[in-house]
Image (cartoon, rainbow, N blue to C red; front, side, top):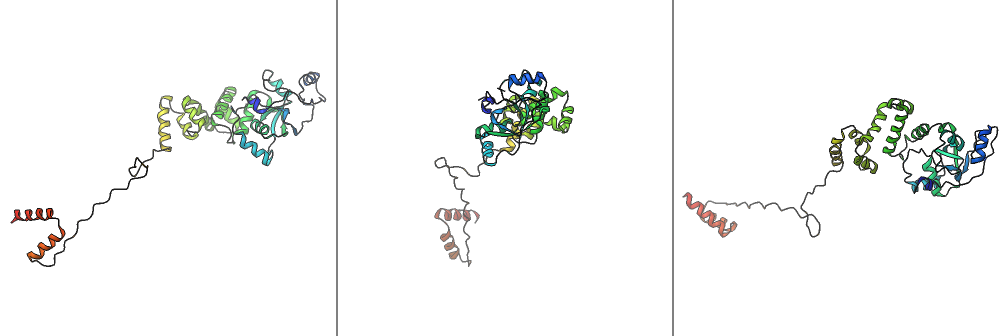
Length: 299
């Protein structure tokens, strides 16, 4: 299912009346049904008035059930950051796929919007800021900044978004400055993109944790697989058996019994008869014969 399907974009909405705007904007507003900057922005709109962000840094809208349940139980705690359709179309005339006739485009909050559709909400609180839609890089940057401290942005998605910002701004240092982060912070996250495709898949699945993956990403690709195997082996060492296992009932076999200590023979007198009786009482016939033969060889 596409993002547009998940977000449930509608085809028609009530049109806002433009106030005090240019004839060009008024004409576009009449043709598209989009509100203009001359309209006082609302703080709450029907959910159908919201379209998803085509430049959303998240590649997939995941784990919506839990968020939908939270919206039902606790309501919407944070407004969606949106831009008017007019401002978005002026900045991105070719990026209208999936917008339908929605008068607002969500810049930050696409996952919440998808969860709201799933939860059956009728309206959502919004904060309108057309400056967020100035360019695709600004939208990307705004969404990335909003999601830096969130756990719902996958590490690989964050790394790809950072690389797009580097392409726009020309260097990691410039991106770090704009995000208010250090160059090392940006470099560490971009290191994930240096991983082999197989290791990137393991990061996305959670099999390979992010911290060691960033370290491994700084290695030559031919050395990465061995380093990853070593890391995974250290995290999940093979289980060792302390006792042999019975193949029939899969229960540990009892440990072999320790050999019994040899009985101590106590002789109270030195008479030959007493010595013979003590040996006879404690030794088997074969042992008694062996002792007799040993004594005969020493006489």
